[in-house]
Structure formats: C-alpha cells, structure tokens
Length: 390
Image (cartoon, rainbow, N blue to C red; front, side, top):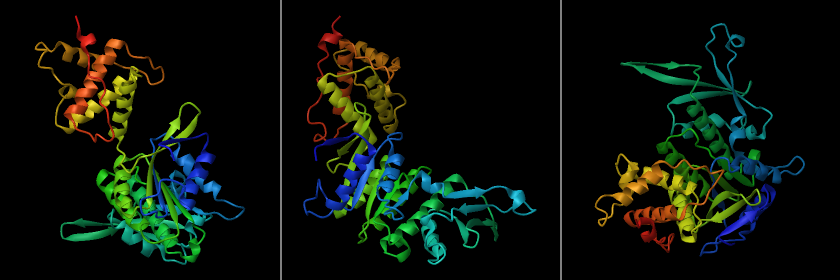
C-alpha cells in the first residue's frame, strides 16, 4: 500500500483491516509470514472505539459473531451494586454485577474463571475476589497487616483503577481460552482491543503491554487488532511483537478533507508522539506551508525537551548565536513563542518574518538534539538573514 491510504468511512476501513489480517494484502515482512496482528496508534477523539464496534458488527451474521472485543463497552458489562440498604442491614457488602446475557461470560460457570483470572490479577494488584456464579456477582477482599497481625477485609469497594485492571485480567483470561480453542469461545476468529490501560501508570502500562504480547505470539488461528493513544504502551507492544515479524503498525488519523480516515504505515519505526509532531513541523517548514498554530506545537516540543533535560524554561532549547551578543534575535524568538495563543480552528498563515524565525528555531533544535536522519532527510532552511536585518 502507499505510505498513506484514505478511507471515506468506517465500513471501508474495517473491510480493509479484515483483508489485511485474512489475506496479508500489504506490507508483508521479508520472510513472507502471514500478518497476525495490527497495531493502530490514534489520538483520543479519532474514533477508535467506534472503529472497534464497527469491526465487531462486520463479523455478525444472524446469531453468529466472530470478534471478542475489549473497549469502553466491555467495562459496561460490569456494574457496581451500591444500593447497600437492599443488600443487608449492616450496609457493608458491595458487589460488582456481571451482565449474564452477554456471550463475554460464556464460560464463567464451566471453566473455573476465578482460577484463571487470579494469577493474572496477582501481577498487578494486592486484592483478591470471589465470583458467585449463582447470582452473577463479584465480591472483593484485601488482606491488611497491622504490626504482626493481619486480617482479611471482606466486601471492599476497590478503586476505579483497580476495577479496570480486574476487568482487563478477566478479559485476558477469556482471550487465553479463545486462543487455546476452548469450546465456549470457539466462535472467536478475531480479538479487538482498544485502549486497555487508561487508568494505569507507566510501570503497569509496560507490564500490561509485555504480558499481552507474550499471549499474542503463541501459535493460534486468531488474528488481533489493538488500538491505543498511549505511546509507551504502543511502542512496547510493537517492539515485542515485531520480533516475530507478523505484526503491522499504523498511525490512524482523521481525514479533514473528506471527514473520513487515513491509515499510515509506520515503516517499522516505533511511533512516538513527539516524533510525529516534529515530522509534521519539519514537513510544514520544508513546504513553507506554515501557520500560526505551528508555533504552539513547536513550543510544546521545546517545553517537554527542556523538562526532560532538567531546564526550568523552554528558552534553554533555543540557540543563542555567537554573532548576536545582545541576544536580540534570541529575545525576539522567545517573545514570538511566549505570546502566541493561536487557534487550531482559525488557522492563519505566518508572516514571512515569523516563518524565518520558526525555521531558525526548528532547525537549531533538530541540530542540537539528534533525530534519525532517515525520518528527516532534509533540514528546513535555516536562513533568517532577511528577518534579522534592521
């Protein structure tokens, strides 16, 4: 396929993704192995959840379906019963209710799900649980140590982050059953996972990505699509799955010209948010198609770089020229960046003078902080002679 492919609607994009997984129609690896996983990086608001549901709906035929999915709707299959007065007089028992009508829980009663979930949960959490298959509820408990004594606190209400990781481990246990071709999940042909780590810190994000990758590289007939806005999670997954040469990474974006979508293959380069932004600025500078809001993006990059390197202000990342002893040009550049509050929704083309300042700042930044030259084959024009003339 070309570097970027445009799709006018979700249905066409879904058909394309299924074709890639079923037929390996594009970007095969050197060993010509069948593609088994697709990774999609997309910002919030792009339509990742809608895409996952459209993918699922495309596999429904009468009463049959082919996709086991994890997304925001999966979390809705679990709900808290917080009406304590209806539970018991002590007002102390809290349970998580399961939607008994969903095929997601098809193997709950026969396959001893608690014994499958528990070892997964113990990787990330310090609480335990009990599944009641008679009334379709889950209760939680935690062992609390006080000095030399310890006790188990029953029927606790876990935090939202703990609830999310429990649901994720529940899903992983089901995915494992599907991959192992258990009869209750024999209908699963695809697994679609959308942003499973919204409430996790970076340490757990790495652990979740690594563990998921180890599950997916096992021999299986099941194909997988994973979409995320979390750069660290995306890159850990790609680095682990790429080793088997059966995974394809893409950047998913909105097509502003058609209200559709575009899909860009990342050329086997791990996708980082800051690299994508820098590439956008570099291309804008190369084409001289610069708008005022590009200053906002540039300042964002400078601020993050300054913080990473321990500076207090982004101005430390703007080069001071030796032939400008009074820092006139340097001061002008900082002034332009500091007082720009430019709208993304009402873009205005930069003045020629500001374009020169922009190219100067960007060019010096890319010279001082080395980036892969294969991603940036040509540096923007650093000539600001006209802009600095009195």
